[in-house]
Amino acid sequence: MKTKFLCLAFCIVLLASPLPTAYAAPAGEPTVSVKVPAAAVKPGDAVTVQVILDNNPGLAGMQLEIGYDESILSLNSPGNLTQGAALGDLVFVGLNADTYRKNPLKVSWAGAANDYSNGTILNMQFNVLSTAKAGAFPVFVSYVPANTRGQDGKLIELSTENGSISVEQANAASGNPGGGGGGGAADKPAGIVDASAPLAAPESFAAFIKGFEDNTFRGNDHMTREQFITILYRLKVPQQTQAPTESVPSFPDVSPGRWSYAAIEWAKKAMLVESSAGSNFRPAEALTRAEMAVMLVKADGLSAMAENSFSDLSGHQDKDNILRAVKAGIFTGYPDGSFMPEGKSTRSEAVTALVRYLLAREPKDDEWQGINLIFSDVQRSSWDYKYIALAVNGM
Image 1 (cartoon, rainbow, N blue to C red):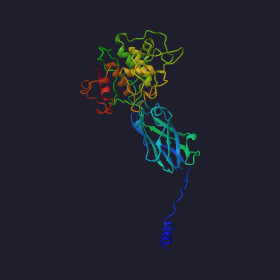
Image 2 (cartoon, one colour):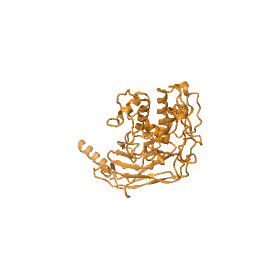
Image 3 (spheres, one colour):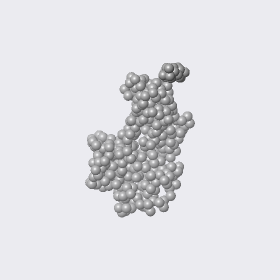
Image 4 (cartoon, rainbow, N blue to C red):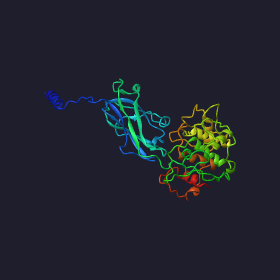
């Protein structure tokens, strides 16, 4: 009798408990969209772009491709990409040193069961380049169908909506407070010293870069191939001999009237850069970390090579020269163990490499701590402060 009473009570409790509610499919179509600030931005600003997921049907995995205009926007660090609050049960599986600098950016998530979260899934902090022109510039988003699946393993179709960043005005300081001979002023880069003295001693060098008229340094802007070559040329070649000797250009896209012509011809003659018949130099393209390493290694004929401890150098055509630059202390890798040879060099990264190259070591505290920079975008606590301080002042 007692056993029957307990069973009856248990059954009553079960009947009294509410039944679980079945998941209701979203009424709308699953959509991934790009959200940008409504207000216009200016050259030199940082701008946060969000990727939003709506009407999540229960994604188990998803891969997105996000494209942007590299002449307007720069994404310089994996730290500039963060996961949003939505999709809390999902984790990045494709965001790493080999992917974040590529355009389009490819980002993947792998999910857990029963995740139907909606909202922000990715935050991207871009830097608006100082050379950005006024206008509206799209940020594109698309998904990879083969890598976007539901909880049942079946493919899921998503709608996508692009965003557009509005740049308010062209950069007033994009003319030439620096630069050097030949060509129109509009072709010359801002922020390069007019005429640097050559090296006086192994641990003495002239200022080789400067800031902009609005008291910014813009360390996140890309360093172009011709800007870097010009800096190296002015540091290595005495000013009185800084004149091109070749009447016929080595590269069809670098004419004798171009401001960087003498530096590029010097680099070709010194075998810092290579050319084949009819090949272009691409002077205005962003310099890669591998290209920078190759030029610095060849400039001094460095031969000692470090062991390869980087995750992304195996098979790279410039691996040996990169490892020579690492052995010389010019470069270090990133915290995730990568070198990012194809990463686009920023002004801050370039001056860091150049200061280490010129000193053949890290700067000492007493060499830079007495320098007070006036740049509004360079804090004393910033990792690049000491390198910028020495680059703009010399020592």
